[in-house]
Image 1 (tube, helix red, strand yellow):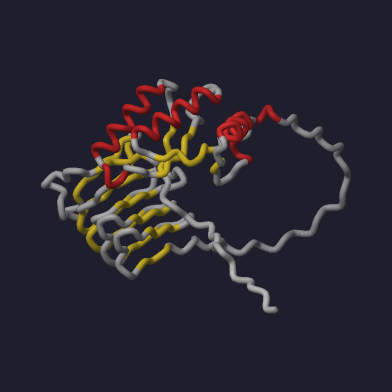
Image 2 (tube, helix red, strand yellow; image 1 turned 180 degrees about the vertical axis):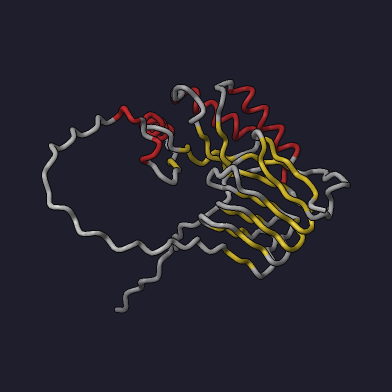
Length: 250
């Protein structure tokens, strides 16, 4: 009898658009009300949006009861908490208690320095001088990602650890993301996010501005009503004192 090796489900790990909620105050009612306001102002962007909760802005990790109250409140406000952002070993234990996964790019970098004592220094040892090493080849910059086809509604393009250049249009409901800067040579009618891993120096450049949302290093601005001085213009977007700034290039 032939064996059926066809999988019932195919699992792929990829970049997805997930919002990050960095909690700065454990005022649960206020956090929930703020989120409800965001959903009401921009339902197409935030209604049933996946959200990672980041407790890294707090001096101490909340207990499971408080965290669960926040999760329940956020769901009632209209978003879907799906994970915790890794912040410490305490956060790992909290996620386990809540039954949620942890998301982090580099897990080890979040651990506090005092969690493991440094190893004692080895005694110095006399060695013969090493021969001179050959000069290392010059490092080349990572090439940016170039998107030549239009980015249509529902599509997401992500430039990992580099800039993104889009030669055509970004449609309404589409999303372009880069760890570096984003350059768009056609109309931007969807969402553009630069500095996705926290690079506050990243910028967004666009030839024809009709954006739904722009973000730099996690700071975002929803554009429900673009000012006439910017609508359809060539613009640049940057971060200044943790505020999104938009200015015409002409």
